[in-house]
Image (cartoon, rainbow over all chains, first blue to last red; front, side, top):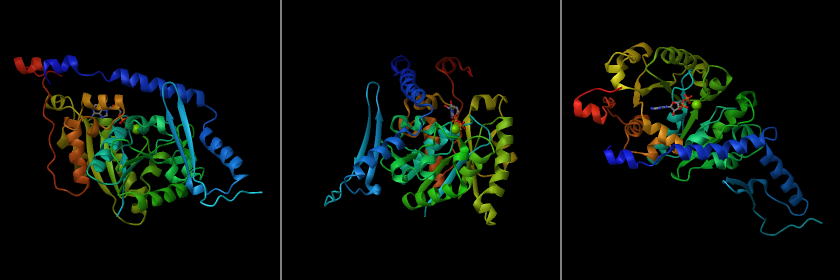
Length: 86
Length: 271
Ligand SMILES: Nc1ncnc2c1ncn2[C@@H]1O[C@H](COP(=O)(O)OP(=O)(O)O)[C@@H](O)[C@H]1O
Ligand SMILES: [Mg+2]
């Protein structure tokens, strides 16, 4: 490592701090209702299943948390011929 | 055929999680299909070390209990296509895992991946024995220090008695990974020597990982060290160990003593 490398090397500790703050804020807010994702998925699916038949194998759930916004994506593949329940 | 590898040690803080991430990534970088599974239920960290902590929705406990499908819980690495993570639950405890549930999940993983790397929790209780239960081979992680060597010996005994392989009368393949090795301190006689540890534990050596700031930097940013700084000494040592796991004959590189700039100029050895 050169002398210049020593002074210019990007510091990783601030990244660590930011990642931890984000994660811990999320985890603390979650204590007690750990399976929020399971609950949300089940309730959303139940509402949709009232109207159309869905294949549970084709349900994708994705999450991305950011400093300002978090997104929960629930991706439900619709059957080719939509069987609308009456 | 798929291989199930457990990274275990008995003692905590010796480098199991760091090594699971680095070996898993190194195997994936070599083109293998790899999943790293966090068995540390209640104290998960592999997600953080892999940089996937913001993407965890479902976990191992959800899959074992049938609340989520395996495919929903697997998190695909954004840097290496062939690397996935199955996170542990942070909010449950280890009793949420059942032997039958784990067996079903491992069998399902065997169909999808070449390597299943199980990051064991510390200790010799349920969590640790479940992590090793279905392993074909074990990486025993130890530091050149008395208590971790003693605990490693204990774990070797448990690997030889409590795994499914052992119970079927077969031998489980065991490899020693010596981590946090400081060549300078070993040379000054302040740390157990490599040959001492090898003689005491009497299992083949997989690699020696030097104690290095690069490991800390990689964990700060959430990237396995083999991806974060492939040219660094610990990354090269992990990549070498991964090649050995894949059956290649590679000589073990001995870490050389690190001297600081001052040390180099004046010929001092600096701790
Ligand atoms: N080769 C190494 N050089 C420097 N620090 C290391 C090395 N390996 C592990 N560490 C550090 O040691 C601590 C414990 O490592 P970890 O992998 O979490 O251990 P375990 O999973 O066995 O409890 C962490 O702070 C990690 O960054
Ligand atoms: Mg760990």
